[in-house]
Image 1 (cartoon, rainbow, N blue to C red):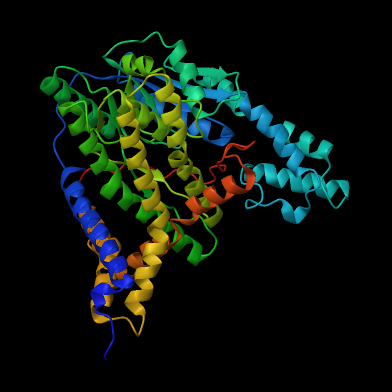
Image 2 (image 1 turned 90 degrees about the vertical axis):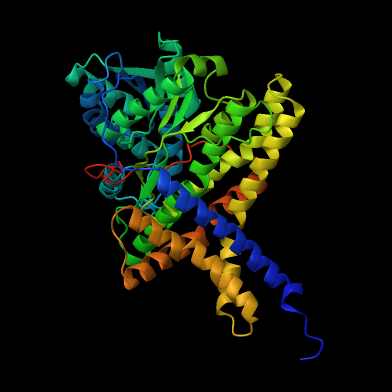
Length: 507
């Protein structure tokens, strides 16, 4: 038809082509990462490492016993290692805030969706107390009385430690109102260790690193020392994510499985390659180092380094990505362990969206990091400009995942789409879902049939279509309220039991 623009002059073509190019590069990164990580190899005998495992806990009473049961036995095989559970006075203040929110709640309000911070037992006890009063709504006094009957996390830790009588286990109670970073720093201040031969290892209460993973970590440290003359200063154990199917409906279970798989693919295509590039660059030169993006679980920091840096940052909403920013300013490499661990993923849609919103807060912390540390003389102006540029690109890429995926889906299925545009959009979707899903399954030793490929690819596509909702909610909440801080720590109560093992064992 005369006057019709060539396909390469249409915006739709450039959108589809740009997304296809990014996804194809991501697919290449997935393939390269899978060729490097979790490769079978016999374990060699090496000197045991010294780990001071730190687990910050808040409203996690029901998971203390499981964490102790998991960590204590194999820490005995690492002489000099310790396990510290650190509770916080913030829990009491948050309980008071929850009581205020519960006042006036009806029986139908006492749900996981409305109060994700409460356990199932607490919700059941509140509902029972409300029924006994014969009133339509909870009173402040009734809510306070019911919650006071449940022990705090600090109470549970003290009880379990008294029962175990294990010298490797410690309990620190942080008296301030700071969050995870402040809890970790409180433990570091009490550690006698300050050497290049011991590590602070930060884990979550639901982390389950296997003895094999820690043995391989020790082996990795020994090889690094032999090559570089010292132990690595910071080591990141990256994670794969798995959903256990706790939701009541199949569509929600499928959605959470897809989101977990999409997050695993992000680990393989972005997190691990970025850490490898950053570590290589930081060792080569002071300039052009990129930007370290650390994660707050499975993070091993040499005790002399964490003291040199001044601990984890406490002035930001979250600490993990901000800590990577601080490491970048000092040119400290972060070594990515070539073995992954597996961690529980969100099991319900509200939890999934809340988690995504919480994680995106890290990207919004970057400007505050730049302002604070530039004022303190850490890093040059050019260092901060480079770091902020990379951080802005990563944050924008996350914000655009869902819109870009949706646009390609519309272009691929649209009846009036030009063939060239349809091909580019289809290639973008294939590189983001079908191809990496098959690569991941093959690497795990379970090749997929056609029907399984279709199902898992569709789940992953749904996860990608939801991926940007949390970040958009974070921006919207900030714009509406003028603050990114909240009275309650932005997390839900972990409700699912842990699987028998949550580490990816090598074949």
